[in-house]
Each structure stands twice: as structure tokens, then as C-alpha cells.
Length: 477
Image 1 (cartoon, helix red, strand yellow):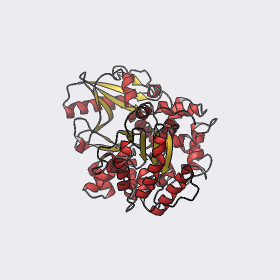
Image 2 (image 1 turned 135 degrees about the horizontal axis):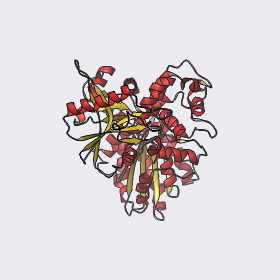
Image 3 (image 1 turned 45 degrees about the vertical axis):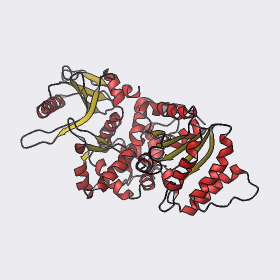
Image 4 (image 1 turned 90 degrees about the horizontal axis):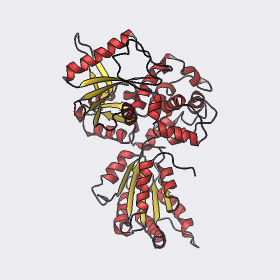
């Protein structure tokens, strides 16, 4: 197995459990194909004594049969092991198998796709609670790791469990997609040598999902790889969208409706606007849908400047979903060469701006470091003012409200060369700052920051207007 790329904090947390003198129950969650299983296997490869994964929508008997078929070879019995009648029996078999091994060494039991095992009326969760509380929690040499792609389910049913698992989780890990720097390291490790602009193009279409990045072939450009993976007959991501949501959510159509509504509004929507766009109820159902999508990493909530959480603006943050809905879902064009043609179209230019902005919002730590304010306490937020009668509107997608009595207003622009500020755009920036000052009544100093791919061309309009430049290279640090 190859080395683990990135995941420094997560790996440290997992390795801490190997030094623990108490039983450990680890809950790891994150969206599908983000690398949870690989991280567990790689970190615990010497201690792993049992690994079992649930199957989506499989009936109870099939799951129990799979359990029997997984553990039977490890037991090395002379006679065929019977299929357990229920999960209580299954965990008893697991206990009897693990007990002698725990007397010798630190051992890890890994239950993958945990939510899929806990189907309706399966009795799985209560049986697991009994297994942990009555026996596993008392085994000082035992680490039980449970994983799930249905992040919201993991939080509600496991992390925030009010029953037998209440406060039993000893380590909670939410695994996020790779950053740009980690994506670069991962591709280099796979002998894919692309410059940072090409890597960013891949990231804008596929995101930092290891399983997607695994499909990138050496010796091909970003456009060629996207073309093959997303638009050819056997491209692995051509039909991934529906599978992705259907495997995670029981009412996936509602989740997809929200994702589509946000894809159509790159500036984002409030909860109230989402309800109207998707014709949802105003009760707890919408709250749950938004929570599930947020915890699974598909959407993000941004707190507007000087507002509270009720005013949050939701944006689509999953790169692949945005790319799929824009270019794959209703595309008549398929086959080799499709993306190379599309990437020269006006629709690509509008999409690339939105996609790059989303990438930047995931790399605010790197932007702050480039600005030299990593050590300054800041609050990140967005801001927008809807135009009124004879009043201009304004929108700021990222600002840093700083404790040093300054506010950095970030303008994010994607271009294939150095970005040029012309007379019209300079006037727009000045007006945006004036509207912001007027409406927020802030007395803080405003700094305009240009976040671009290749920097901002020096000219008379930039001088005295733009205080800081952040370039693509900075996002990889």
C-alpha cells in the first residue's frame, strides 16, 4: 500500500489510540470516496484483526450472511459456521474471536459503512451498544473504529446518541477532501506531473476526492483527463452523481433538488430562499436536509457580516456536483474531445469563475497566510446588499473581519493570464466599498485583496486601489 498523503491531524489522532491504555471507540465520517477506509486500513494495518462493511439497502439476512462469510475463515473451524440469527449473536461470535487475540496485542475491529448495517428493524444499533458497553469498553487493548459516508446519520445516531452510546465515542474524526496542496502531492505520488494551473482545473471539476483523482492518468493534460473520465462511454464519473446521493440519503430527491437550486444560484441562497425554490416545508424537515448536506460536505453555510446563523447563506461546495449539473447532466455531446470543445465555450468561462471562487473559499487559511494575517484573529464571512430603488446592490463573497481594526475584502477572479483591472471594474470596486461602508456603518479600514490565478496587471487603476495580491501559487502552501 502507498503512503498516506496529507491527513496529518487525523493520522495523529488515530495513532494516539494505539498508545492508549483504555478501550477506544473511534467514529469517522465524511462523504463517499473521500478515503476513510484507506486511512483506517493503512494506519492500523498491523493491528487490524477484523474488518466488515455494510451493504447499501441489503436485507438483514444478507448482511448477517456476509458477516458469517467474513469471520468464518478467521475462526478456522472444522465445521461450517452457522449464520447468526441476529446481530446480538453476531457480536457474540466477534467477541469470542477477539478475546484471545486481545491478551497478546493491541487489536482493531473496523466496521465500515456503519449506517448501512443499521437498517430498519435490524436491531443492529442496540446490539452494537450492548457489545460495546457489556464487553468491548472493558478491553484495554481494543480499538473499535466505525465509519460512515452518511455523515448526518453518524452524528445523530452515534456521536450525539442519547441512548447506550451516549458519550462513549473517544475520538471523532470528520474526513474532508484533499486541499490543493494535498491533491498535488497525491498526483505526484501517482507519477502525474502537472503544473498548478492544470491541477486547479482538475480540482475545479473533480474536487479533492482521492477516488476520483485516482483516475487521473500520467501523460495527459487536465482537459484530456476530464474528457476521458466524465464524457466517454466508460468514464467513471459520467453516472456517479445519482449513485452518490442515492447511496447516502433515503430521500435523495429532496437533497438533489437543493443541490440543483444552489447550483443555479452561485451567489448562494438563504434557508427561506431554498424553501421557496424547492417547495419545501418550513418545519424541521428542511433543517434536517440542510444539516445532512452540510455534514456530508456537499453544501456550506456562510455567515453574513454582522448577522446571526438565521441569516446564513448556503452555497454548493461540492465541485463534482457543480461540474456535473453544468456540463454532464443535459449534455448532448459525448465521446472523446467533448470537454476540450466545451472548455473553449463562453459557458466554461462563467463556470470557471464560480468554481475557482468555491476553491478559494476552501483555502481561506492559505489566503490569510499569504496576507500575513495568519496570526491575527479574524472572522470570515460573506456580505450582500440587495439593490433598492435608485440604490446600487453589492456582493462580497469573502471578507476577513480582523481584530487589528481592518477588513480585507477579497475579489476572486479566474483567468488564463494576469487579470487586468479596467476603468469600469475599478469603479465597481470603489462603489462596492462605499455601499459596504454605508450599509454596515463600519469605521474599520478596508483593504481590497485580489485573489487571482496569475496575479493582477500593474496599471493606474490598480495603484492605490488594491492593497494585496494573492495568486494561485499561494493556495498550494
